[in-house]
Length: 367
Image (tube, rainbow, N blue to C red; front, side):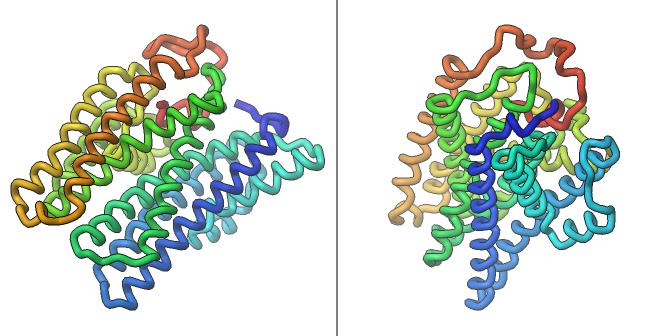
């Protein structure tokens, strides 16, 4: 998988800037919200908001540092000295360093015709890191802020800004990863722009959003619901273990990767090893939709005071409609709009010669 400056278009360069803006806006708004909660005396909310920021950032910095080291070892990149690498990742700016490096190199390639190698590889690494950050930070933040608003009736403009930016970040990073994935694997067709991309985005948005709402309702029903969420995380992590993922170069990092995959699977489906996904996807969404629909029903039955609120009925209707739309767009995308390729291998069969080169994407989440 070798990219040149010609593979990296000006549109892609602008998309990289947009992704950086969303990333900074998401982290910045959450940090401001943490300060607001702290100054108002809501120490628990401030602590939880900060924990999600730090957990997502820490995971991203770990993988970013290891990938820098792997690329340096393989001679793919003339990286910074080890001391500098450690410093920027300890300061939690590894992903920002990657953004500025990619923007600088691609700018020279696009506007000054300077030869730059591996631009799309660098963009793909960023898309994977952003996917981690999204499901470890942005999505849990949405659940937390929704819980605070619905359960404690605490609202502020900054909360809504933070939630809006988190939502945009989820939509952007999910589709950006999908497009980078299709672009970077030589044995599959690229994901077309236009209707296929929009339908894929709608499928993800309309399946992730009711998950966020239903999990929020479960926490409102009882904070002990977090134990059930931890069990769901364990099942996702255990599935990754059973699939014997081999994404990382060390055993310890592979365990961290599997645990991260478990978090992602709480909110949306990804095929862990790029093999036949029809059965696990069907089982996943049967369970997910059943759980989504059960949340408002259980809240209504075991917390009768919720019946008099102004949010319960709209949420029930939204979950019903959103689940239906999400599954509808899922079926539409994979039946009519998925960029199949005649030379693609059948799921589970050995890939042909052109994909034997080992890359991070070959072993990463494949759907």
